[in-house]
Length: 264
Image (cartoon, rainbow, N blue to C red; front, side, top):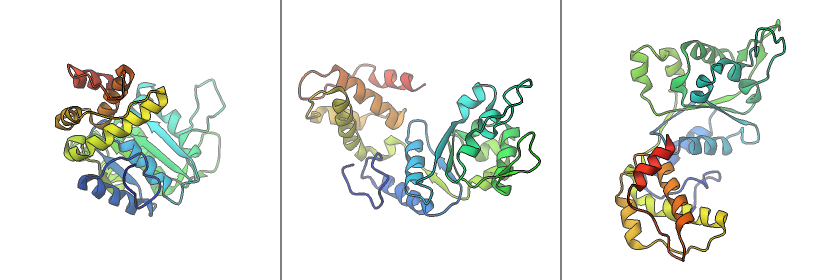
């Protein structure tokens, strides 16, 4: 990073804007507690980076950080298997030790929690309230001590009103929420981010690129970035691949549309 952070663990979060500093201050405060955290923000804005940073500076930093992509878990057809280690199939009497148990003593990170089914939301609420899970074939419940961090790009309050998200779970998760600003809300960070990504990918590709022309910086700063930081990162990576010489060459025509398509 180009500026000194008040805490170690935020090295990958680049920027010096007031909006970013406000968000980091909230993240540092909640990291010192053990409360559930709900991270809010648009796709590509860096919610997972914030979640991992909170874990790295928390009291659980030496324990597991277990990620569950709720969208992928749902599409796989068996999110309950992934979270709670239920039986893999009716004919299979063995049980998987999965995400909840793997996160014991550490952090369970639920990415895009709005996609969880209502049944799984009920199980998650029970876990948060009782700090234990039940496994088929075992007479006693299994105690679990974990910290939950969840993200969403959706308005969960609206989903509660539409009865697709449990109100009691929302209240439990919303003890501490962190809004992550969109990239267009912190445009002054774009030059820092562009240089950071340029250096990152130039090192990876063993290319010697020294500068980003002022005109290119202006173009990047003035762009809207509907795909946020991820879109900018994708564009800079492609630009590093294409550049021959010391100055970064950023393709203009269709660059944002192409990058946004990559994020989907």
